[in-house]
Length: 152
Image (cartoon, rainbow, N blue to C red):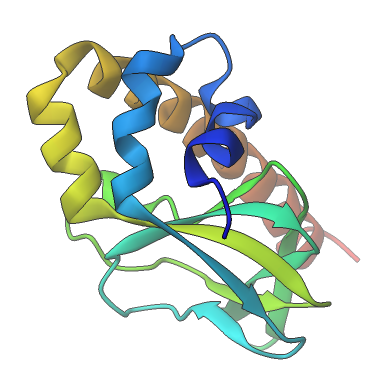
C-alpha cells in the first residue's frame, strides 16, 4: 500500500511547509495511474480535483480557432495539472492529455478546501504556490499565443 503522507511530504509543491501541516491533505488524495491518450481533465468540465504528477508527462492543450488543437505546455514529475479549481467559475480552462503512462496524486478540492478552513496557514501557503503556478501558466499561454497569432 502506498504511503500517501510520505509521497505528499516529498513533493516540491509542499516543500517548506511543515509536515504536520501538510499531512492532513493525505485524506484528500488518491493515487492513480493513467494510460497514454487518457484525459486528466477536459475544457469546460467542473474543476473538482487537481493532479500532482509523480511520473510521466501530460500535455495541456487548447482549441484555437482556425488553428486546431495546440499544446501550450508539457507537464512532468512534480508539476500540477488542474489549477482552475482556485477561482470561479471552477471549470477547466484547458484539456490535459496523458502522453505516456502517468502516475498522479489526485486531490479532491472539496476536501482540500476543508483542510484550509481547519488550518488557514496551510491554506495561505498552498494558495500562494498555486498563484505562482497560475502566473507561470499565464505567461506560457501568452508566449504560445504569440507563436500562434503572431506574424508569419
